[in-house]
Length: 239
Image 1: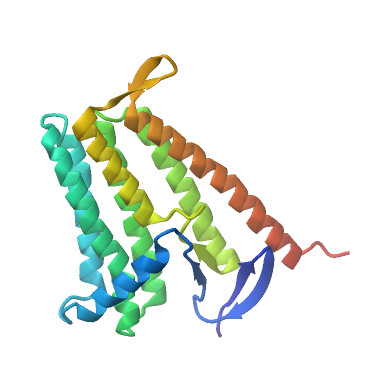
Image 2: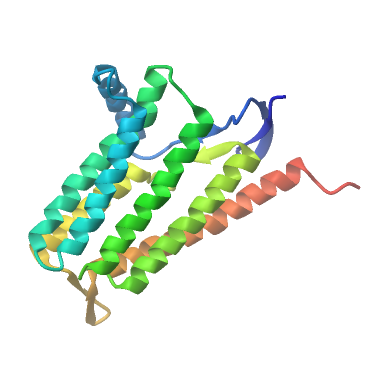
């Protein structure tokens, strides 16, 4: 018997049938350009390389990113490894789903589950590497990780309850975040870790991490209220 999913669109809930069906919303700044580029790359990728290989590459790349941030404690040039790792992570993490769709090898439940377990693990590796580096305090890294995990949990609940999975937030998606992180890392290499703040100095990545965490918590509240209201309208209390 097919499961029934509920799709939230503009504050409304519409019924959608299908096994594990949900709608993907990706409205980031670079989404259209990225989609065209990924389709071209997927069409040219050798058949012996499949989506699982790309997913594994993305995860291994994040191991390298975290390790490179940690290694920068002893050698600043290790930060170059984080930039290369972010590029490889984009290639693997962004291309795996496109390859599956281009080749008509979709595995919706497997892909959704594995992809997001890998995403959570990747964020843990990133924050651990930053916390072990001299560029971000452990408290800021933990705050960022907690915010990310809470937003992820709400997104997965919304996917189950509303049938819509939103990949971007305020026109910012994973690719834009990788670019911002790479730009910040280049700033560390050229100008060091510290920035002037309120008459004193602080770590650039601490400031960025706290701002990002605040944005994520704000998005969590907004999304929870929006989805809660949409579901309430679809399932009101009986009169």
